[in-house]
Amino acid sequence: MGFTAWVRNSDISPGYAGLSWVAVAETSDSIDGKAVPTVRLRPGIVQPQHFQTDGFRGDWRRWAASYGSRVGFSSIPVVVVSATNQNVRVHVAAGVGVVVRASRVGFNLASRNSDIGPGACNFTFLAVETASGGDPTLFVDSGQVPGRYFAVENYPGDWQVWVVSFAEPFATPPAVLVTADNSNGTLNSYARAAVGVVFDVTTDGFTLAARNSDLCAGPAGFSWIAIGRVD
Image (cartoon, rainbow, N blue to C red; front, side, top):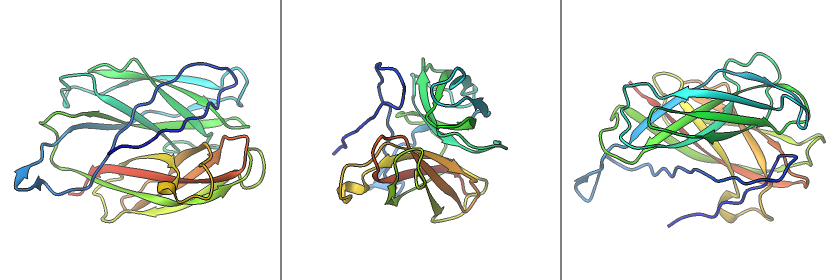
């Protein structure tokens, strides 16, 4: 029926923030004999930028992303973003992405480095409109990784890594997005504010790396979705 979102500010200043969310259920093309309309999706990836250390000038970066003309959104879609190491050739910073001024043709992406050191970061995005007329050739895979214990940031163990395999191979590396969760309430305490980064996506899987941006040590799990073509 729904979920509860817990959010922690990784910034050095107070302020306001909202949340966009996407819920995915892997079902067949029909339910009770009725066809399920295909939603309109536009997965994509921007290009990496370099970030300064958290709290220093240059720890914020911005992009302008376009959906292109093929999708043809009839209303402003919901846009979610996730950090990735694609096309990054140096240390990957744990960037936190913020969607700014989404429209029917594109959006602006702002990101801040939550890491204690400089580095580069890239972002995968997914724009979703809950209207029929989507691409029926897109395939969705999803899952969760189990919770792990994170040390306090800036101490050994503040990064954790999982290896994820897809249920079926994609034709090309898909767009993958991740978010921290509390392992469906099975953790022995509340989940810490870990920032997930998608590493090294292939047709068969990816590596999920996450860094604790919290002031306290503790556990966190992750949910993920992958969207691409299978033929």
